Image (cartoon, rainbow, N blue to C red; front, side, top):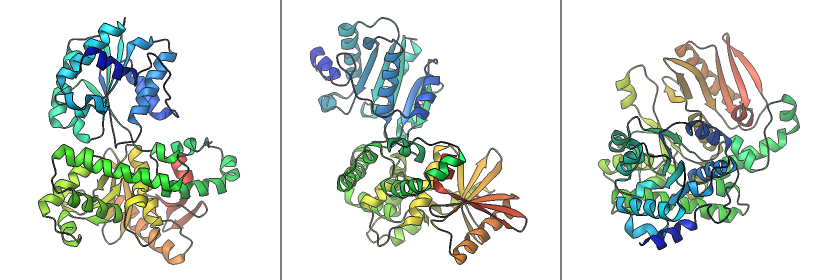
Length: 437
């Protein structure tokens, strides 16, 4: 590509000559990134494809423009632009930078966004060189694979970067995208109870991919989610790791999408899937999916690290919408959808989360430092006496084990209340109230 072609491509993505729509602000991320602006460190945003990383950084650039930073001092490069496809290497980075400096002639600090930078082999050395030379540039990079900061990359960027993981919308953000601004007052919850219950149901089905949430047509939502699922498998896994048998990769992904919230060992997965797949392939494909943020594995709590590593792990999906668009199912899976949403909410809080399983099972154990702080069970509705007994008995066992006096049951339907059992308090809390607290 010559310089004219490069600048022509960049004009489509930058604020230099036109206004660019930056969508609904996600203030939680913007506030955290704002704190990073005063540092020299490279800011890395990782997360599943289509979770909003690019939009968040465009919002950051728009905020800088409002703060009177000149437009020419911002540079956004999208490495998934087809025009860059045949030239993705460090030479292209140099050419883009030289063309930008020559045509825009920025004065002062430049704010540089390298979007989906994992497409460029060796990008981390180029970025490090700019950092080490103390050039007057603040660098942001995004990527849709955890390998963006694999041990090799991390070794190059050690002490030079700050990382932020972007997820699909949490429930508070989902409400904001639906035009509902949550309030912490008890009166607000009472006034909006029915609306919040309905929005909870919608969130559990639709999930939190921003564009999907903003799409009203149900069929189009499913098509978008199916395409996201396909893109993650093909672009972030199959192409990246040069997988030849993409059909088996997809079948394993569909298996996890249909059987999420259950516990498995890789050996068990190999035995129960209804297609031929070696143990090595199960192991590799599963970790590739985890690195692409499609799934997460939750470890069983144990004071023995060896036992913890050997125990079966529960699998969760990055977003409920994926399950509802691609999974093979015979029921609504309401309880599993709620459990997955609670897990995603806990992970979004950067909680250290496990599950507990001895005689009975507790869905989530939250650890802070050296101490277990909270226990959660998740149940769509707890009005049935047998269900209530099952959930409380497992929590009582967990509370005795961890020497806790309180625990919670998160429900989608039902009133907020407390139960006293054996001198311990179990709070039953609607998902919407817990998620917004």
